[in-house]
Length: 355
Length: 83
Image (cartoon, rainbow over all chains, first blue to last red; front, side):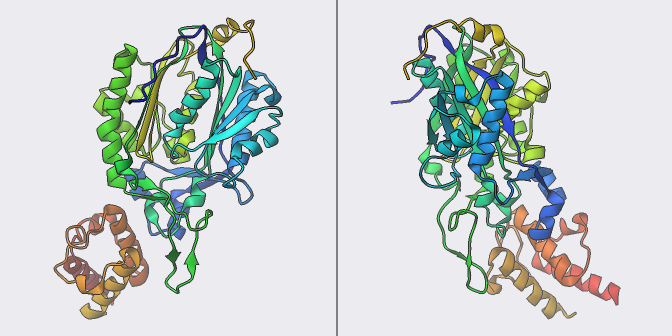
């Protein structure tokens, strides 16, 4: 049975109140990569579209990035992190295999009292998959305020001898702060799809890798290394995501011309542009950040939203499509009627959720 | 540098970048069609060529060097011109 999800029939909607963001300070330019990789700045710009990316400091892990993003989302909403009820961390690069990274985010951000767990939906698709998980807890009434934290240290999965993944990824985090909103606003129709036949198209397998002298080569995650087939990823993204978005819009009763902003996963600048071209959507209806941050995995879509908000490109009442895709191969897309303060105020006096 | 020495060095580079077996690196082999290198790997090959041979290979030159023979001819000429 397909897992399409129509918006639940509830007395309230699920709105994205704020979007928090955090990018590590350290910038790594393409020309810096030329020192450690057999590559060229101009090739990366022309073929990937990345100019510079951020890299977590030695002592920074996923939970550090995520905690910053959660605190930022709360600051923007004018609330204390202790007022968050549930923390869902979307990550494929947990600080440790157990407990969930959400635990450390709760501790480091001071979200004392929140319940937490992680959602690993395959890195890049998480920007919609993890959001959908968090949104369902608000829709059901179980929680009143949910922080969906998308955080990854993708550069720790790299083998610095494998140029393909190394020129693409960057580290970063973002946080959707979800609350009840007025009925008919907020997160609407959501579609999720998975195709395991593409399991090895972009993945982080366990492999024993050795240097020429026979000594083991490791990533920040030991024997786990990011690996991808760039041509196959591009073919999947540009070949299948546009039809998927059309299916979403048809299910939601909208056409592409109704959409004010397309927030697409920042896999590669040319993939973003290719999807828009297939959809017949002009580039001025999107915002991109892959040029400056690289592919930040599940954080890329909320980081696009955050930037659109800061640029004044996203306003209450606007219709936004969020589309995240990648490892799985999986795709997730949702259409959101962006909420303003009055949409949240309308539900402020309603009864609290079951804790 | 002799043509044989240039070819040997190219074989080392192709082994290092993409683990191409030396016996496949013949003069008639094409980097894309025969050695199955993608554009990212070809960039890596020419980055190493520049380092090993100590010559600057502009992108517009590298783009025309699609076979091992073309690369050997080019590096032989550059080597002769430098003498």
